[in-house]
Length: 102
Image (tube, rainbow, N blue to C red; front, side, top):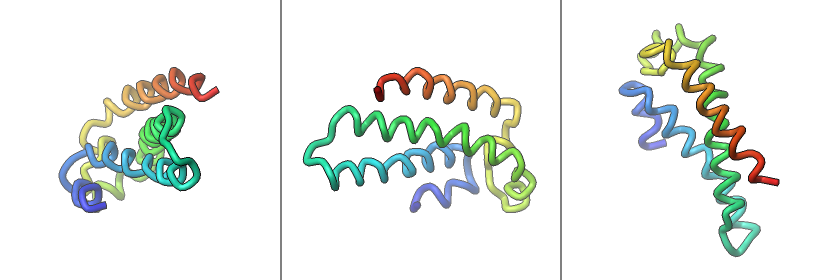
């Protein structure tokens, strides 16, 4: 939160930092239950991190005016044409990684 929150007013990279921060709780939970971190733990965190980007981009579309008024530098405000490409790219990463969870 020390980097993520102030970054909102400076760069659209805040969303990616937030996705990393959001992917950490499953690792914490895994560590609480399992004595060792495995590739499955990393996969779980990766899937959650990759999921957060298209999820947030979809939500940000309806909130773009609020972000603008709040002075937040979100991708939807700084480069809206790029948003669909980012969503599709991260959705493709999820589709490629998901079978590895089985």
